[in-house]
Every structure is written in structure tokens, then in C-alpha cells.
Picture 1 (cartoon, one colour):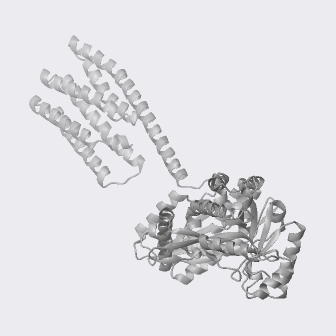
Picture 2 (cartoon, helix red, strand yellow):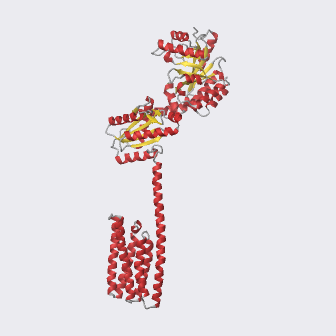
Picture 3 (cartoon, one colour):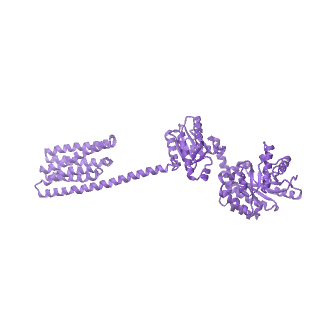
Length: 620
């Protein structure tokens, strides 16, 4: 149907030509019948042009009605042209008039067939309406040449019908292919914007729907955007497999749909993160909605007999307070999520401007820290670890210090977390290990050096090679290097961690478990890994809750150390009584301000000289 009304100009030109030809021949022939038919043809032509213009600009009708209008006009016009030519032959008007009308009739029939081939019934009907009466009039003529022309006209009918059918088939194939391509394009677009696991929008789909919501709603609308992250979801994939993980994600998606308003936009942003947004009235409504989602997510789920509990953290940003476009709103919600996860599991946080300032500060520290490594602004200090029986220095713990040229000394708590988050800790940790090994190589052979390792440093590619390289550069016996790790390293029991510890232990490097008793303490770590030393956290020695219970814990750890042939280090020793308490409890080594603060390498050398000349550093 679209093809019939698609080109009004061709119909207009054809109608104009037909009216001029028929009107002129009727006028010069002075035949009354021809004049009547010419007037009818002109009326039909005008009606067809008017309908075409109306359909394209004003008229909105059903397809069947439009087709009926076109058929009526087409057959009426074709019949008028045929009747005009046939009457001219039968009334034996001038040869010139007959020739003009026959040529126009045959040309019209030939041209209209492919034009209206989208509806073969109409195209062939018009062809027959023109050619049948004309052929009959030609065959009835007394002139032999005219009858021969009638035979030619008769043969012209099937050839034109064949052309019409071929054009129709080509048109039908093209339309079918176009429709198929359009369906495939729509399907591909849906797939490109849909997460295959949950059926929600994916990142691209979220960007589109959120941008459309912001654009159409205007900057005065109130929208809340929630960024949700599942806590420790990696454990589900590692322990139960990715197929079970996908089922958990699908269940989370279902719970989100049930918890949120119908018009809310929901997307799985990637991995275990979901983003959703909706219009809100005020902050209180937003908080109620977020708490409802948290409650739904934390409800236990049972899949294939497995009872699972999943918690989540949510960051929230609102429009227009936190941003007037989609990008700023996403950035604000992402920052809020970061702080929610910092607060612990199952928390929600609203964005505030202080978060942006903290982010800018972290980025500044990251950039300056990279420069500090290159400019040698960093230095190592060494705090001695003392044998509690002899008072001798057994080891130095290497501690990093940063003396900023403008800001002065920066505490490790200010820049180490930034280094952890940005990955700079890997480069920084390798630098610390190398400098500590070089310093230790200058000390007596019975003194070792302890270096704290970050989990990221251990899991980085080439971690073992970096330690070995530091030992080779310093020409240091591996047995004099002690690597301290915390219990947080073992929250995710990674094969790479075990390989790292076992490979270096086989070469003689020793390992110590730091801050024991404050994290996810488990005897399985001590049983599985070749630790030679356990460091009892300072909270059991000099903390606010120190008392009989803390002393009992120290005695128990010390007894375990004796049984496993491990040394026990008491951290945070500040007073003589504390030294006596931990020594009596069975600790073999001590560390703290009572003996010495962390000092530069040249003062560490002086302490060693003093230690060797006397009876030990503050020997009991």
C-alpha cells in the first residue's frame, strides 16, 4: 500500500499529460462523445490527485479504505483513457488524433504496470482496462495495418503482465528482507541493552533509559539513583560455581523488581553491582525505599538445597541536589557506595560534598606518591624487635615514612590506604623490600629485617621474582628476610597466596603472622602455612581492655607457639610492667616504645653497635 501512495509526482504528471492529450484531441476532432469522455477523464484525474494529497498530508484511514479509493480512481481513469482511444478509432476521427490517443493509452498502460506492481491486482486490472477495449477497437478496424497493430497490442498484454509480476516479486522480496532486517536490528538492539543473566538493562541500557529520564523530565524533577553492590559475592562463585552465582543474581534481580516502583529503571551494571533509579518526593522516602531493598536482599534464599545469605551496600545520589545530569548522578552514587562499603556490610550512604573533597585528596595523594617514589622523598625507619630474655636486638621491622617537601611528614595511615586502592602499593612494596634488604646486608648476620606485605603485592604478577631480585641485589641470605602478613590475606583462600608463601619458604625466607587476634583468626592458617613467628596485637598488651582475660589469651598463644616451635612477639610494649607480664606469659620477643621508636638506618646501626658493646637493649 505504501508503494501506491509513495510517489504522487508521477501520478500528477501522468494525469496532467492525459488531460492535455485527451482534451486537445477531443477539441480538434469536434466529436461530442470524445468531449464527454475527456471531461470525465479530467474529473477522475483531479479526484485522484486530491485523494493522493489528502492521504499524504491530512487523511488517516485504514489500509482497506485507502486501497479501495485507489482502485476506484485507477480503474476509472484507465477506463476513461481506453474509452477515449477506442472511440477515436471506431468514430474514425483524424489519423493524428487516433495516433496520439493510442500512443498515450499504450504508454500509460505500460508505465502504470510497474508503478502499481505493489498491488498486482490493481496494476494488471488497469492494464486490462486500457488494453482490452483498445485492442478490440484496433482488431475491428477495416484497415489491415490497424488490425496488425491490434495483434501487437494483444501480445503486449502478457509481456507487460510478466513485467508486473516480476516487479511485484522483487518488491515483495525487498520488503520481506527489509522487515527481517528491521526485526533483527530491533532484536540486536534489545540484546545489546539487556543483561542475559537477569533480563535487566545492562550498562548501555541503563545509560539510555537514565539519560532519557533526565532529558524528558527536566532539571526540576526529583530522582534518586541507587548503586547497590553485593558484599563478598565472589565467595559464592568460588565455593558454589558461576552457575549458582548466576542464579543468585537472577534472584536478586527478581527481588529488586518486587521491591521497587513499577516505573523504576533497574540495571545490572556489571559483576555483582546493580543500579536502579526512580522518582521520589523527599529524602525520607528515598531512605525507606533503600532500607526495603536491603531487607529484601538479605532475606535468606534456598537454591538446590543450599541456604544462602547475601548482604549488600548501597550508595545513593539524588537529583537535582547531587547532579543535574546522568553522568554526575552516577559519579555521586558511586562515591556514596564506596563510603558505604568502607562503613561495613549492609550499609547505605547518601552522597555529600565531603566525599568529592576526599576523592580529590586521594587523587592528589596518589599522584604525589608516584612522584615521591621517583624523587626519593620516601625513607625507611627501623624499629627493633628485642629478645625478652637477653635484651638483644634480633630483628628490625622496616616502617615507611614520607617526608613531603610542602606538607611535612605524612602518616602511613594517610597514604597507605590510597596506595592499596590504586595499586601503587605493588611498586611501593617492592621498593620497601629492596631498601630493607640493602640495609639488612650491612648489619651483623644474626640480625634480620621484617617487611610488611600487602595482599595486592602478594597477588601481583611476578611477586616471587620481585622478592628474589631484592635479595640478589642486596646479596642477602634469604633466611635474614622476614615477611609479615595479616590474617586479612586469608579471607579469600587463594591458591596464588599459598604458592607464594610455599615457594619463598622453600628458599629460606621466613614468614610472620602479624596482628594476630584482631582479624579473622583461625588456627587453620597457622597449621597450613609455614609461619615461624606470630605477633600478638598491641590491643592485648597496652590497650584499654588489658586485664586478666587479655593476659590469659597471651599465655594461650605463647603456649601454642612453644608447641609449634614458633616465636611469639608482643607488640606495643611501653612500660616495664608490660614487658615483665608478656615475658612471664611465655612471649619470646618484644617490640614497642619501651625499647625504641622507629629510627633511620644510621641510628639503627648505632643501636646495633650499642647492643653489641653492652648487655643488650634494656636487658631485663
